[in-house]
Image 1 (cartoon, rainbow, N blue to C red):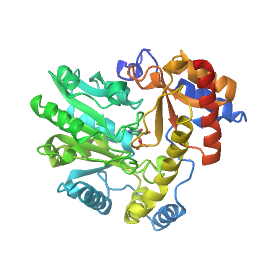
Image 2 (image 1 turned 180 degrees about the vertical axis):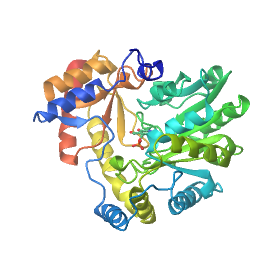
Image 3 (image 1 turned 45 degrees about the vertical axis):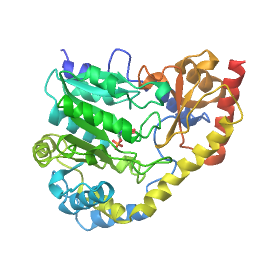
Length: 390
Ligand code: PLP
């Protein structure tokens, strides 16, 4: 019996880029002391106050089917938050609550692309992007952002790919590069979207983790609110990765239609999770800053170590919980470097090649283990690179 192409083509010919992560996890599972600097998972658990709110909601009876597009209270809270942060008028009808940002990415492409449509995304990219686009039957078309431009995409490159495309997916603050798109970059993106009548899907799941400059949501730029779908999530901002809670913000008509996707797929997000998310949002920015703080500390530790060597080149990440390191001076590919680091030192990082062609010869380091252990592992990584480069 044949399986559908819709499912078999989701993972492209080059695999899905997660092999090294699975290998490291398998080693850790059998008790090997692997330092995992791979995925974007915090080294803290969800705050006990949020868990208490979840428990109260569940015991209080919010365990039945919840409203498919999200509870009114949570949609209102997300709308208020987005409006306060961006200045764009946003109401409950602009908000769909989703089971995490990944589900929002899927829903957004589902809403705007038909079979065979060209859907653009920027390379380097978060590893699920091409598969998400293929999953809804569209053509995933990468546009490279260059290392020499600090991975800010050029408007000219976007414009060259735009004719005939339906959508453009961008992500700022960016995973894997740590770039926060500048006003000039966003103006270029806006111009291309308007000229070629593209939907913009703006993945902003790291909007609470900005170390340099400021996060600017492209939905706030003139004329963009009616063509932008913003993907948000509480995974990174509130260390709620396992709760699967996020949102999509966009034009009312798109959000209204997306209720039918929720009805036919997830049937909404559990009510007690939504209540816990509401509690967490109502705690305000202090909690978000507390959750983001360790990444800023480890970024500083890493920059300090990098300042004392010259085998690795890296720009300080402007946002998010990762660093992209250029290890081309070692003569190895990102994959070979990562394999060697794991085999020789039990330190797991992601090969740049997992995130596209643009970051070949790079590795991505997640800032996700306790400071002292991070400092030791990062120093070992740098020492290995220095030995190879000499
Ligand atoms: N978008 C980006 C750029 C990510 O890095 C991630 C997770 O790592 C997601 C979306 C999906 O996150 P979640 O589904 O947990 O909200």
